[in-house]
Image 1: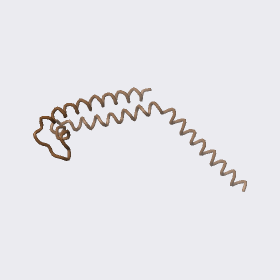
Image 2: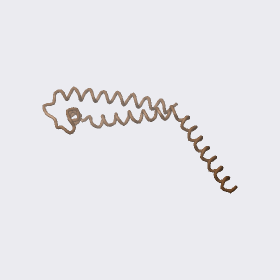
Image 3: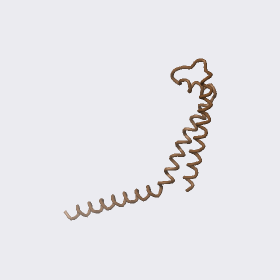
Image 4: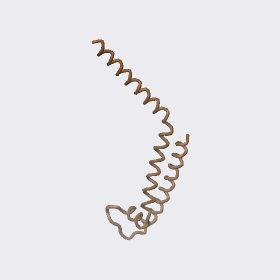
Length: 103
């Protein structure tokens, strides 16, 4: 449950930060006189404003939030699936060793 709460908070905070930086950069890009092609108009606006760090941090927060949400939601199912796979593998190993001993 803690992972779900932390994941939701990270996701929400990352989205708010992303939108804040993106909207400000879009407003600033309309006033640019010139820009270079590789970063483009938005990238140049982000560089001039100093928002690239916040932009990248927001993306990292969004990805971490999604991972924590999924991990928190499906942790029990994943543990059960892993235990089932290990159990089946152990049964196959013991049945193969018994078949070889009978031969």
